[in-house]
Image (cartoon, rainbow, N blue to C red):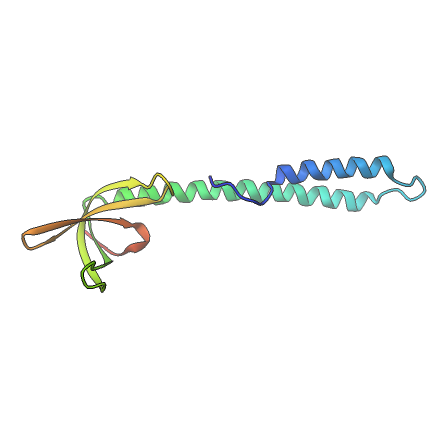
Length: 136
């Protein structure tokens, strides 16, 4: 999971609790804090924690689904577009998926595709988002 510059909900909750304790220690006894406002803030922090947890869980499910989909493409023909290095033009390619692997840097599922043209064969590494057609 990627780290973010945004504080996690647990860090925000700890900061809020420190602030709350400081406010309670220094409040004016004749004008105490509003309990409803404090309860609302605590509820919002709890909701933030739940959303953060759900987001993390959905990201895990999505990654697993993408890996399973990539594995289901083994042995199938896929169509994708690649740039011809000699001309710089985009060309349609059709090849057979021979392998599936994960990019160690990004965790993205990639396909090893062999494109046969006549007597020659070329290997391509293709991301799932580049596949435009899948055939048996």
